Every structure is written in C-alpha cells, then in structure tokens.
Image (spheres, rainbow, N blue to C red):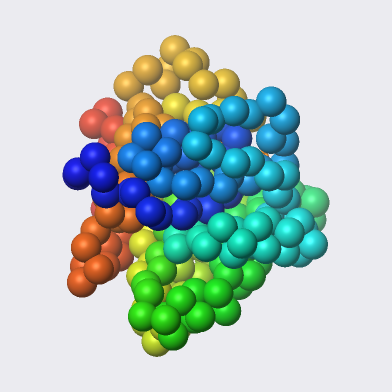
Length: 237
Ligand SMILES: NC(=O)c1ccc[n+]([C@@H]2O[C@H](COP(=O)([O-])OP(=O)(O)OC[C@H]3O[C@@H](n4cnc5c(N)ncnc54)[C@H](OP(=O)(O)O)[C@@H]3O)[C@@H](O)[C@H]2O)c1
C-alpha cells in the first residue's frame, strides 16, 4: 500500500472511541485520510487529523447529526464498526438484551448507512464512487452455545451487507464485509491486554484489512475479508 493511498479520502467511522474503531481511525489518519469518528462517549479523545462527534447508532436523531457532518466534510466511505457483544444461553436472553444487541449491531448499521445513501447516489451522479465497510465477525455465518443473540445479530448484519451490495451496485457503491475472529479489545465488557488474549488479533490487524479494502483500485471490489489469529480453531463458515 502506498503512503499516499488515503490522501484526499474522507472516511466516517462508527464505534471509533476504542478497540477496532480507534485503530481504524489511527490507521486512516496515518495514511492521510480525513476522518470523522463517532461513539457515545468521545470525551477526551484526541487523534491529530481526526474529528470526533458523539454518536449513538441506535438513535435516529444522533445518526442524522453525525451523517450531516459527514456529508459536510464530503464523506466517500463509511466504516460501520460500532457493535456490542452479549453472550448467554438462550433462556437467559431478555427483551432488553435483544434490543441492545440487535439495535446496535443491526439497526445501527441500517440507520447510519441509510442516512448516507442519498449522498452516495449524488456522488455517483458526479462520476464518483463510494464505499461502505461493515465490521461484522467470523461468526456472521456460524454459531455456538451462548452465541444465539450475538450471532443472530451478526448473521443479520451480514444479510444487510449483502443486500446493500446488490442495491449499491446501481450507484457505484462498493461494499465490503470484514469478518474478524478473536480480537484483543474491550469487546463484551472485557479489558484490552488481558493475558488470555495475548495471541489474539490486534485491533491494528483489522484496521489493515479496512485499509486494504478502502485503498483497492476503483475496478476492484473487496467483498469480504475473513481474519483469524493463528491460535483460533480453524472453522470455515
Ligand atoms: N473483539 C472481537 O473479538 C471482535 C471479533 C469480531 C467482530 N468484532 C466486532 O468489531 C466491532 C468493534 O468491536 P471491538 O472489539 O472494537 O469492541 P469495543 O472495544 O468494545 O469497542 C466498541 C466500540 O463501539 C462503540 N459503540 C457501542 N455501542 C455504540 C452505539 N450505540 N453507538 C455508537 N457507538 C457504539 C463503543 O463506544 P461507546 O461505548 O462510547 O459508544 C466503542 O467505540 C463490533 O462490531 C464487534 O462486533 C469484534
């Protein structure tokens, strides 16, 4: 990848305050992109070259505000990364758990993308392409015990990603699904750097995959990237 590959690009990133999202922001600005990052708590966040804005992807008003700023900046790519993980046996899932996980991972992707579709269509009318990168998971196509709720949300997010790819082809939108295995972040109310995560993927590994998709030449669409730490059991979905 050339050092200049992200110069002139304007990228909006959700879930940008920590973990994978923050690493994506850092990798993008390091390559010269202008970045708008959103998360519910962005207080004190500082990455030179990036602008942060409070964003709750489950709240249509908050999404509208974020999308308006993204359009103002001339956004050409959106990274839907905001997500939550909750793991419990099926009988323990409450309607509140369901709404939190599905609203964040599925509705959030739909609302945030939907708020930019007209803008991307306008870019197409001016001969410009756009990109959407959805960070789903390696479990967007398989499941496991205590994974009903989370994997249902990721299967659904994958379906949303594929439907958008069909729709977006009509207006020059390239859509990519990034599917990481285990990544050392704050995911699922854990802490980054816990000893048992030492051999897991780093957030920067996923950020490199996002950069790869975003810097692909205009004739090339990266449909999907599946990443696993070497130690994770091989399981092809
Ligand atoms: N870590 C893994 O092993 C792994 C594996 C595969 C896929 N993933 C996916 O990767 C994505 C990022 O996860 P991560 O591992 O980086 O987790 P993380 O460290 O917990 O970060 C999650 C990010 O999402 C934001 N977020 C949560 N709810 C939000 C909302 N309603 N609106 C806006 N932002 C929200 C959080 O910020 P606020 O709390 O301030 O809003 C935070 O910035 C998720 O979609 C996750 O499903 C993770």
